[in-house]
Length: 156
Image (cartoon, rainbow, N blue to C red; front, side):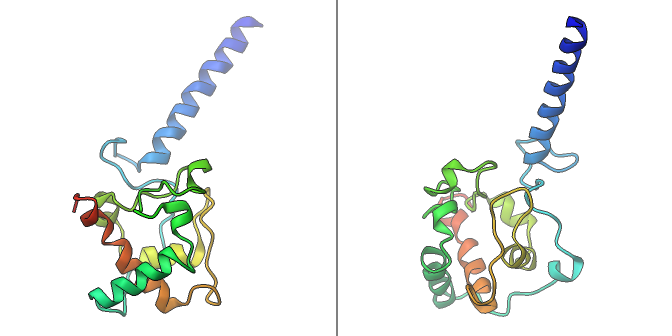
């Protein structure tokens, strides 16, 4: 009986460790390399190919910041500086996305980000935003603002 309980505990520990690694990475990536993880389901191909209809201009980025820091309430989880350290985010597991990570931005298209804003993210508290809360235009503007975080952090 003791041996069986010990074996079950070891299997649980091994599975838990694998789940942790795969929440940080995708297949073939170590946690140090990876930014792709289970929190970001693959968007449908048509969403991945969507192009941001707004130009990346200071005016559009400023509008995106106002939405991120205001009515979008993104900052409450992702933090004012985008590091995933907002006051509500500190209590979440997994922690909110760190938008200062340049690797994250290299791996995602604007269309994928738009899809997550519209649909949320499974296995997290990332909710989907209805068009009555954040319009499609506002979501695209926020994406331009998100892309500035690595530069602000001195990373990109």
